[in-house]
Image 1: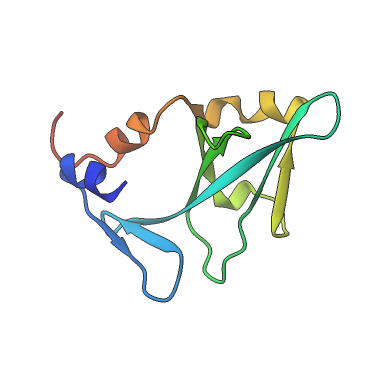
Image 2: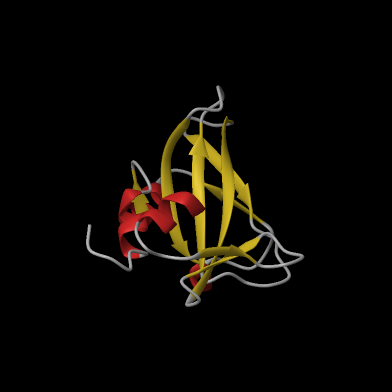
Length: 116
């Protein structure tokens, strides 16, 4: 991820002693994997986002049971409920649709500091 952001002229650096990264010295992100599990008639997926420091954005890579990335969600951390686990299913898919993308290219373009 850092290499792609840098290729657009941005900066990407880890925050010491955490799982967070600073992008362009402007905002922080955390990156997590959401695993799919079939428990009911919907395919649910779940991820953990526990962190001492709160990121501005949470990048979620949703993977299937074969560990293939299906899509990505770029979620504003301030909208996430309290707790350490989030399970998404059914109607939640529609609510999160505006945060979904097939690839991270739109996110990289937002981080750009030079014309593409």
